[in-house]
Length: 428
Image 1 (cartoon, helix red, strand yellow):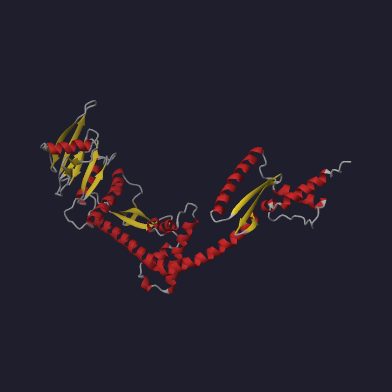
Image 2 (cartoon, rainbow, N blue to C red):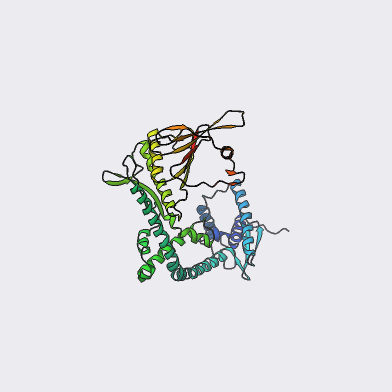
């Protein structure tokens, strides 16, 4: 006589009860009410209510075969990552596949824990460590960062402001021939952190003169930058986070303003093509001139290099830009497919006209000189200079056969070299 087979309804209730006992249902729906078995089998009514609630809550879940395969693949990958992470710290994780799914058992700190229990324990531990670290951060900020880092930021930001003032002094002393006045502004960027203006005012003062409120405000500002950086998913090591968080350069941006109708307006506004070129070129020349002014040697070269200089700019604007190079006392090496730089604004220039013919491995160098009013054929240098010109065109290192080139500074000497069969310039 065969044993009596339970009805299908009882099998379904028993299967649902077994699945709930695995703990997986509580992971998927933590707030759902599960019947209390009391050590026995569930009654049909609460089991049916639970089944309907589960179906209603999970109705939006994709249960197609493709989704099931993706979940199985991801489950295997995530379990491997969990095993690796736990094993590095002496803990273990094992999987128990069954007809109701796969259950993961974890031994953490010598105790067997379910995944939800471990997640809750880790959340408590992380919160406690965060509290301890936050207190440690505040201590570090108070004892080191506020005094040392704030002092360094004060020096760097102050030096940047002085550099901008020096560049603006260069611009003030060397107005353009059109009378256009420009200035550089170093201002808070659009992505500047909140509270930068207030922190900057405090950083203008010596840390020794700060009140307790000032010290707390600067500390809170610096700590907020560190916290924002650490919250970034792409954040790296602690050193990288500190470096990025306290990089004052990301807090500011440069702008160019033009004096118009008695007030300063952005130079990016409506303007002619020549004015736009000047607005872009003049601040760069001023920055180069200010940088070279910091050198100790008064007779050193003040070199700038321009490739395809002033392309797409009309001749009048080209003349003004080259005149500015003279006004800023800069030495320029430039290449151009059409620029000879023979303008009254240029007091002197030496030109190397390079000509080549296809299928011939040679370059003809024709030399010219401009004295500010007339262009005439230049004298041919010796073979050593020819060697330098040939190696420069060939893209060589620019060294003499017996040593490097050592240019000496002299007033108003310019040479132009053209790499495209036209001409170019070296202005010293």
